[in-house]
Length: 187
Ligand SMILES: [Zn+2]
Image 1: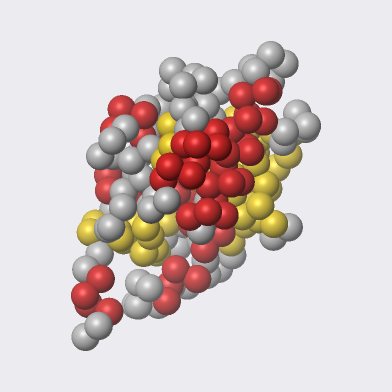
Image 2 (image 1 turned 180 degrees about the horizontal axis):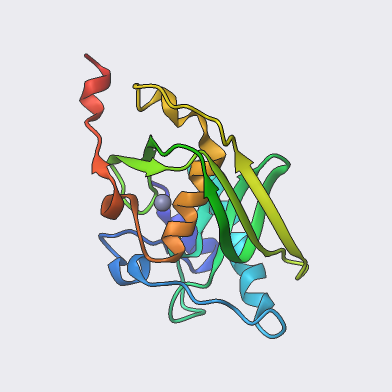
């Protein structure tokens, strides 16, 4: 991993359970949109950069360790139908459909992949960097996953949002999932 590139440019680094366990496990705090928007703006710049650099599916504040705040802030950078957006103080409004097994990796837990139960459709709200309240949804309510856990991860955007929302609560795929045996794919 080219971790120092992000350190040099932003004085921030990828938070991992190995090096920044407390940060990864912290419950991110909401920010005051009137007085702390600059924090989200700065974090947004780093998240955009880190996502491209490491090819992450999404990024949360808990993935980026820095010294500007004592704990992560409730901000995530996620894929939507209209491209990636940064959402501040997000809240899950509804998760719907039949839960299925999603196979996921995590930039904060290098090397391992986990099977995690996810809902195929999710509605959530939050604020944009322009302080605009928005409600978004992604996935498909009637999605029926097959037996194959890898193919069933097709519902990716809904899973990424749930993955990043979990991060903001200090929860990782290691906590709620089961270790997926990558060698099983070779058989
Ligand atoms: Zn992650």
